[in-house]
Length: 244
Image 1 (cartoon, rainbow, N blue to C red):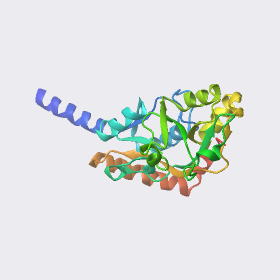
Image 2 (image 1 turned 90 degrees about the horizontal axis):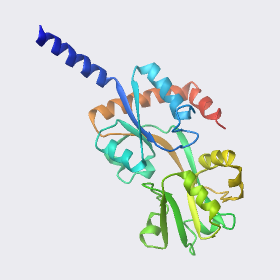
Image 3 (image 1 turned 90 degrees about the vertical axis):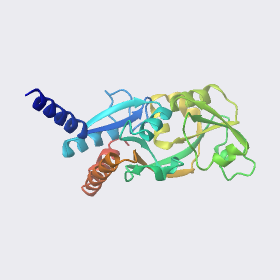
Image 4 (image 1 turned 120 degrees about the vertical axis):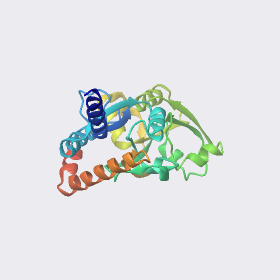
């Protein structure tokens, strides 16, 4: 009898574990897609709620720093994390979702700075790139490697913007999503004095990055099937537009 009970318990645990979808999310806001404060529902959270309702997956969120989330998905401790294939050097080692939204990156500088001075194609480019720990910037990586520019790391986009606001040197710049900057500018009107580029330095799809395991593939396929339906019926566009 005890053996039967143990087998049933193990089967129940295995089934419950199989029905979870573990997702690493940033410990800081990435507006309007994700907010660390669960009271503020972002785009991704709305999508995940619909995904859970349709598939039955129980969403388990793991809040982690950028570098820790990279390790979690690489070690298969979580099923997925928020990322873009273009920002991941070893992207072939993972499964990927289709694009959820397009991220347009722009240059942000202090009130005394000129964004055009920091375009990657500018032959006279020099200065300091303010960046989040663990973030990769494909257009600027060679410039950093050649020490044409140098890098100063921060723990959040908000910390970077505060630094640009408080330090008026025109040699410092950052690369940031236009949507993220606009969100923080609305929340902190003082950031209106910061200068931004009218041109973009890159447009990449925001995706989910899945672990390269059979479990990861099953969840990637399931999410992609769901995402295609969400795009086809117009619901994804309605969710995104509600934040503009």
